[in-house]
Length: 160
Image 1 (cartoon, rainbow, N blue to C red):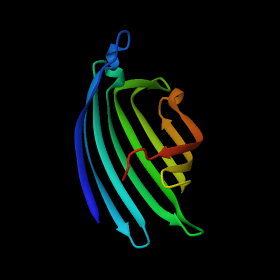
Image 2 (cartoon, rainbow, N blue to C red):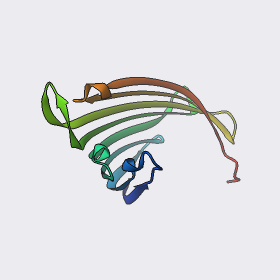
Image 3 (cartoon, helix red, strand yellow):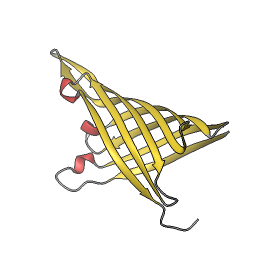
Image 4 (tube, rainbow, N blue to C red):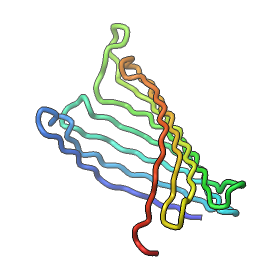
């Protein structure tokens, strides 16, 4: 069993004409990582951040909740399957018009990731990645969903 805490301050700097997006973004969070028998593990995480941008349009508070489960695949000894879900509601400082009424903008984002990883040799591994992301908002122009499918290769260049 392992747990950890992280906190930091992010600084974002944009050149003109996007200088209003420049921000100081302090955040903190925690992660609990638990190792299970048979090389399995699960993890839960939380993160809070407050984006303090120069312009009010990009100021928000976000909470991110996450869960992950990782397990070897039974039919292939060294293959690994990782499933992860994250939920991140966001509350903006600015207001928008919804049906003629001014309200605070609120977004909700869900991300579901699945990764199947297989070693090709001792130094090379390949992974198939699938991600589904959906964002709902009371600003109807900001609603979307997306499917992303990919193949990645990892190389271990440094000797162990």
